[in-house]
Image (cartoon, rainbow, N blue to C red; front, side, top):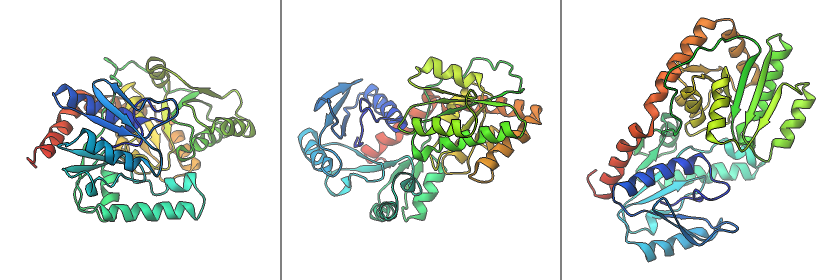
Amino acid sequence: MLNWRDPENPLAGGAERVTLKHMVELIRRGHKVVWFANAFEGAEPETEIEGIKIVRGGGPGTSIFHAFFCNRKYGPFDLVIDQHHGIPWFAQWWSRTKYVAYIHEVLGPVWESFYRWPISSIGQFQEKLIHQFYCDVPFWTVSESTRLQLMQEGVVDVLVWPNGTDTEPLSDLPSKSFVEPLKLVVLSRLAPNKRVSDAIRVLALLNNSGCSAELTVVGSGWERGLLERLVKSLGQVGMVQFKDNLDDKDKNIELQNAHLLLHTSVREGWGLNVIEANAMGTPAVVYPVGGLVDSTVHGVTGLVCKEETPNSLAAEVMNLAADPVKYQRLRENAWSRSHEFLWKKVLPLTCNWLENLASDKI
């Protein structure tokens, strides 16, 4: 497994949690797994996590060379998984074995969230160019949206294996009255591409329109200060709570207590937190972007607004507030569908496929 981050990296996120689940399952099946990642401050060059050998070396621009030597030292391997995060590992040119590209999302507009022009345009151009270089490589991705984006950029062979979730759905769906103040929740890193600022603007629009609402933001990141200042400037002090470093139990309590999850990201690979909220009986209202239109089934398990704007999302929330029967239907459907993404259902299919790739049975 080639991934820029390993599970102990302070910057590790959902992609690493999902990857870890798959690798642990392969260990359980009796396979040997080596996970190569970039080094980070204070990290040991080698360690072991749940039976997986973790090897670290180099950083941006140099870690590919360290990965090459790791491949020589610990190989030969039956399969190399080249995980893309904007820039891949180019493993098909040096791994000397079977390989698969693994990608959660095509970054596309995400480049613009972090870099100004011309860097953002250069990033988008090189990403498209890389996908053309990889056009004959088998791809593993997590949503139909990403599959279509890859195929638009020239990739031919793309299979979708959706992510699972560690969040066990509630054993029974308790009642929840959809009454004001509406309790809204955001579960996200506080980073530019997540557009948490838009969720805060949605809150202001609701309260200024006479639809009383409160917002809890669960997550941490470098935009915390900016978001707090936005709350103050919009007159929403006392209506927004920031909560970070919550364990899974407390996170699930926040999701269960909320009426709706708001998701305003630029793009997602899948939108794992949508399914986590659904498992707690909470539907989502999301922007119409890749990943979120896959994890949310519009009008069935949640709502996909028409435009990527706070006004559009606020309108969906207000319309739903006037239709409590529809809200209860969304809750029930969301909770029911979340059972489809338990790891015990997701892992066997994906890991069977990886085993077949490694043994040339595909």
